[in-house]
Length: 418
Image (cartoon, rainbow, N blue to C red; front, side, top):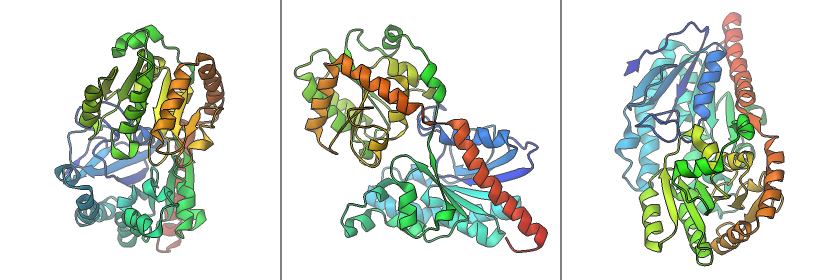
């Protein structure tokens, strides 16, 4: 399927191979702009810089008038109910069988200046595009997932990360790795990828949120939160790696001696029903908001007293950074590179990974001490002023992609194979 929505007049052409139906991590069916906004900002920035974007993605209802959309069968959605073990084998195989030929045909017909793949799934496709059509290739990793767990025994490490480790065997002209706290730059260098091909960039954030002033009472009314409650916020995709049930378990301990404590779970995902049942069965004062539009996150933060993060991979992800910017103190598990931003007892509070008891103690102590929360917020906002804006981050990516495009142009002019 090919949906030509925006032919444009750009003089540079980028083909993106994506594993995602939408450029937002939540709200694919309803077109709600919620969750991660990286790809959305990327597309805007590249179009402004004169690039024509072609996006090869799974079939779905999502429409994006900014790009020319090409699709492939959405086997991700059709097999979403399979076991994790089955999907780990099936999805890479189906991707290579279904998407690689489509990508190569597009590369031959469109003759893009650069082909970019999202995630480790795309490395075979981008490699073949380079091999067959001579197109410079780059893969963008939004983190490296369980590759961060270098402390694991070798057998467990290689079993858990087999697909990603196999993906690194396919050479790319460049790798863009986002620093989400999973040490992606170090990981790629350790796997033998040349350092000069690795571009390790910070996540972009909405720096203007630091200046937004939201009314706390209005925010609580908007989200149905009790006016006088002490509110703990958990904001993440509701999946196993984010461990929302740990946050619920910690809050359950806090609530025994704090009847005015209140938990807000924001986000969606396969564990939403489990979370709702856990809250209901424990009789906790809590609310599951589901999807919250991205632009409403500062308003939600204004309604809360404390932000909690319990991921297995890193708790330096965007929601944590957003809490720091918006003046909400953070309590988190010390995983990945979390401590480089959430500095214990300075810009937040860290506890040992997986220690629900220690997390509950930290939550209780912080809720009982508004002066300490205020000190943490002041230092957290000082750290946040050093975060990178979206315009700065996109400029870094533009420099990488422009250099690849110029290399191809130079090769054409010199007659050398690209």
